[in-house]
Length: 102
Image 1 (cartoon, helix red, strand yellow):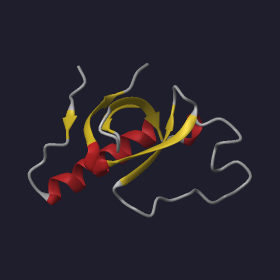
Image 2 (cartoon, rainbow, N blue to C red):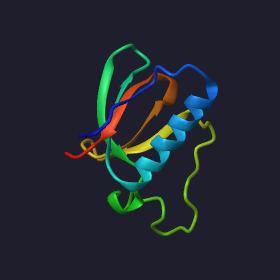
Image 3 (tube, one colour):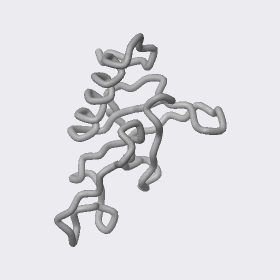
Image 4 (cartoon, rainbow, N blue to C red):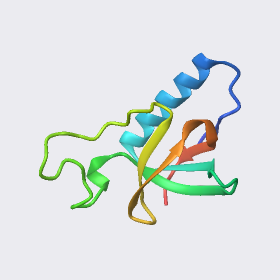
């Protein structure tokens, strides 16, 4: 059973720890996230930052040794496994995340 991680966190330290857990999980495997878009609509996305799951030519390491880094720590830039495109969401809009086995 996969435990659901929710964004209802009481303090900044818990939020930072949860964001770090999510970033680590995204680098390992596909993750299912549920977040509120800027227009208020809830969106479910199966995503990852594992470069082995991002096809060429969208893979940021193909042809370059530099991996793109996010400048805003609250902005998650991820590969959407269903749309096969880069997408992003803000951590503060995240409702939940779980293991994303499709």
